[in-house]
Image (cartoon, rainbow over all chains, first blue to last red; front, side):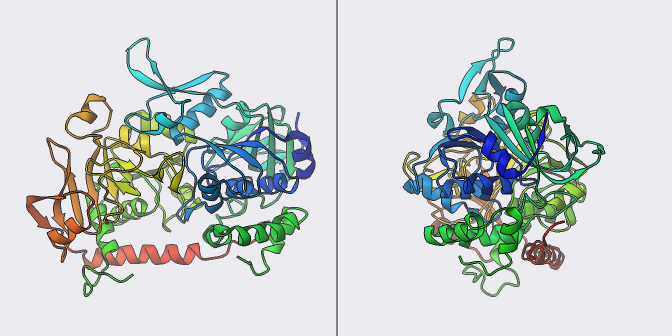
Length: 284
Length: 268
């Protein structure tokens, strides 16, 4: 049964130091507000899981919340590098970051296997590439029927999944439409799940091809309008491409990044204050 | 951007590269599109000679027809113009691994003579000089698409003798090395650079220059390549972009530049 609660109390009670945390959203519906709240509460030693680390994990890594990252593509889409992620991998700043690297295909299958309660995912992947040499969790398995060599990866079973969605109703049933990424798989593979939403409505009205996460699959629902920014929620906002471009300069240097995070995240009480603070000149 | 090769041409080398890549897509091809140059080229194809090309983005958007070029693989423009949107596990499992893709269209940070791609690290994996974004969808696009097109600028830093990491397989060590792995897809069949078009030799699988863009000399191409580049004896000249192609391309890019610099209004 989902608690309808504030984001700060959901993060405080459901995310613990040392947890494996999967904050998903494939370009669309990235739970940025929840990322900020984890930073504000100073969570530590997290194993962060996410196919596309994006700005949300650049911030968490740069603020020292992560000890390990499980990922498949770590960039600022269409813009360039994630500078804080790079600084952690290249220079161990602010902390050393252990990485476990995959491809999109194998990670998507690993979430699917986690949701299905299986220990592993099987797929046709990684042939001829160097990644299996550096990631011992990518292994070979023989098909017992055809003898084909396939790849096996362990399923993903996060302690907590965190996603953003368009709507929930008053019981906590969650409705998602548009690009659904791996959010359903992340929630169903995790022990606990936090969902931030644009709107809480009387009853959710499913659309064709939309996803419903019944209230009993979700631990907490938190109302955070615009909580995906600079990602977006189809039907509510468009992607903040301008901010994604600006992030490159904000995050490039340690001092500029730290000052920005202090002013726009640590010194703001919640996401609404954060958004309001962005109307001020950005010191990059 | 100043153009060394063709300072007086009415187009720049990136436009030439994009147009050459766009022309290679056939009407009706089902194309798995990487972000950046591949996406620009694939949409140019759709708006010129290949109106029925099917563009698939790894965010799950199948049959996207964006008016505004996306900055990411998941802009709302792609969702709102797609025939159908599926989950990320489904796009990789049913559509890519399931063998539904004719052409995978990729960019690269480094490329070697056998079409192997590095987008992972420069330097040692454990202590990288430059940490690049990594694999994303590319390794499986490279093996499971019917064929692969690659587009990137040609310099001695991008066309390298030995990449530091093989992220996505081309022809591996050449010859029948790829064939021995029994991969579903044929591998990279064409590379579009700002200097010309390369194709693998039928036997050795070494990428060979088959067409130079107007004004580019064989020596310039060799000087921009980190291995001893072979130029095919019948190497021709790529037809210059037409006024129509340039109009469509510039119009598309101008719309994207305007849209991507607009500040996102506070929602609700």
